[in-house]
Every structure is written in C-alpha cells, then in structure tokens.
Image (cartoon, rainbow, N blue to C red; front, side, top):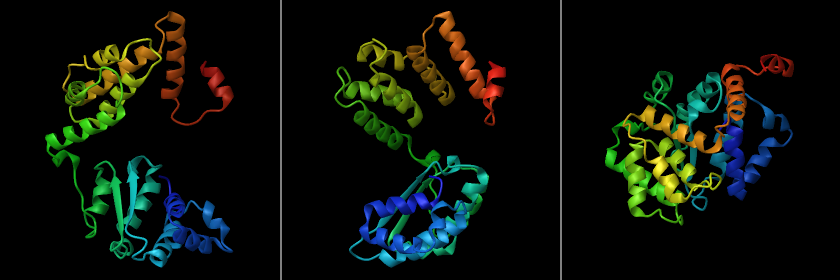
Length: 248
C-alpha cells in the first residue's frame, strides 16, 4: 500500500456510490490521481468522499494496511501515520475501521500510542495457543487436497513453525511445488527436519531447503547463482547497465 489513492480506488471498485463520489473529486482536478503528497491525498480523497457515502445501506468499511513500515521510504509512511493518528480519522470511526500491521518501531509507537481512537495489540502478547491455531488454519487452507497431508501433518508443520507465519508460508510453498521431482510426503519430510527452535534459524533453514530444491548443485549453476545474488545484495541503489557489466 503506497498511498490513499490505492485505498480510494479499491473502495471505488467495491461500492458504486463511493465510485461516483470519487469521480466528482477528480472533476477538473485530474492531477490528484498522480500526486505523491500523502496529506493532499487524504484531504481530497478520503474524509469528504467517505462521509458522503456512509449510509446504513453501505454498511461498515474495513481497510487493511499490511506491513505499513514496508510500504515505502520512511517519510512516506511517517506521513501516513500522522494522518491516521489525527482527530479527523476518529470522526469516521462510527462506520469505518482500519487494521494496520506494522512492526513495533519507536516512531510508529510514538504516533499510535497517543491516539485515543487507536487500539494497539502486540502479537508478542497473544497466547501461543491462539497463534498455533491460526497457523494450523492457514496451513490447512494452503495444503488442502494434497495427498499425504492430513490433520497430523498440518499439526506437525504448525508446531515446527514455532509461531512464525513466515516459516509456515515458506514450508507450504515448498511442499506445494511440483518442480523438484519429489513426492509431497518427501517435501513434507524435508520441510520438517529443521530442529532449531530459534526463529531466525527456522527461517534460514527453510530458505536453504527451498533454494536447494530449485538451484542446481552443478558448479557452473552455483557460480551463476552466486554472481546474481551478489549483485542483488551489493546494490543498495539501482545501477546503470554499464555499472552492472563492470561488476560482472
């Protein structure tokens, strides 16, 4: 999610009344569609447009912003935070709900913790049993219909995930893939051999298992893979093609 234009367009796709109200905002002001100014986007798109269509027939609006801290450069999401923590948002809460999932970074906490209309919940405070239940449900959906994957296997994967949805997602992707020439049961066994209980090691081992299944171990293939990854990891900023040629 990079801007309130995304939210507005998504809402317009799902609600004809909102779409008509949004179209009126753009009338004689088409430059708003391309503006990178977060504050201007909010002022022009959301409050007036939402209020104009919030009726009993429309029902409640729920907007999900996942991984806010990964939505762009820090100034971008800090501006979004300043808007979402403002009193103007509180006025919309009778029929409007916003769910955000950022990391608990100090600047994010500083803004949201002082906003009276924000309810903050840390996943660290959620009982482990609830997290494992949710991961079990996620795995069940992801691996539904696969041969040899039943309730017992789902429970084993969830326990091995140790509360990490990322690991569970990687494991499911690895088990579902059909490019390795291995049976589902063999992929399941490979994914669950990681014995470390430390989250970092679990994820690292899962990535290692996945890469081993898709990257040839032949020397030339490994050289090409390492060369490609070296360029990706070393390039903090985009390089011109002649710069990449020089690196190669």
